[in-house]
Length: 127
Image 1 (spheres, helix red, strand yellow):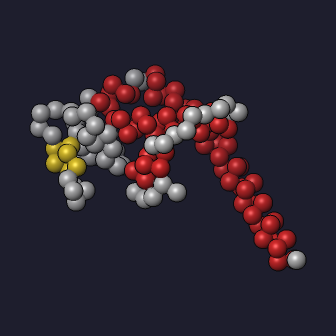
Image 2: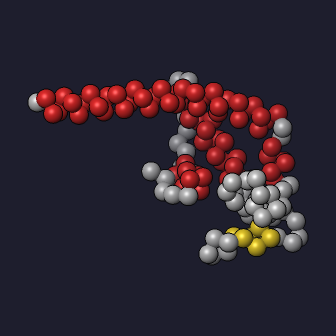
């Protein structure tokens, strides 16, 4: 019985710790949302140079200008940490907004793109 109690206490503390870590993230989400909207980032990101992503993951610059849906060219915009499209970044922002809304007590819609967004942002699986 003591082993099960110990496991229950460890799990309960992990739940508490996880929620304590989420609280400051909600403030970050709010700041990012304000910046995204105030700077009209959707337009700015859409105008950045893009690249075609090859099957091996490498990029080939789009010579005709930005191509909607293609990732931003990290060879030209080297400060962007991962090659993502402006659309992908917008979807990720929506996911963060929905997460914050959930923690603020709102009902949120199902985010079917969440696993894909998480995988793109982290380079791994969605779960």
